[in-house]
Length: 152
Image (tube, rainbow, N blue to C red; front, side):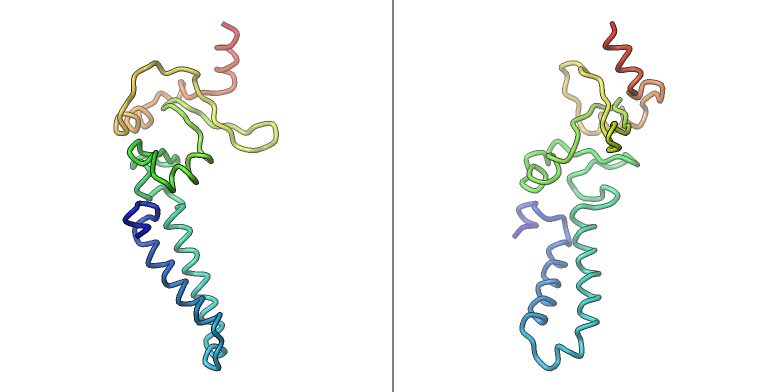
């Protein structure tokens, strides 16, 4: 059901069901449980790793991320109102344009650097991806650029 509602990425539900089976065996102890305890534990850890990588991902292969943006993950417009994306991805994401840059903040965390205004036009996901991939490296936002803009 959660896959149908587009809360879980494809395949993650099967992994959750596998975890449920392992949990049930470990909670309802029986003499046989002792002989499979180590294997079940290792299986649970591997399955949990699959759940985490499938749902949260390492390389943006979830359906809510745009394709062809190596090194960056951008949310597809059509997924912005999805319950999982709205609750978990968007609050931890930056809202950036194609010319954004990244830098360390004074406290050592990564921060987004971006232009204040890209104009009023809305661009489609494929246009955004193209603009991001083809951006001029000299136009990627830096602290120095923002300081120069503020002085004008």
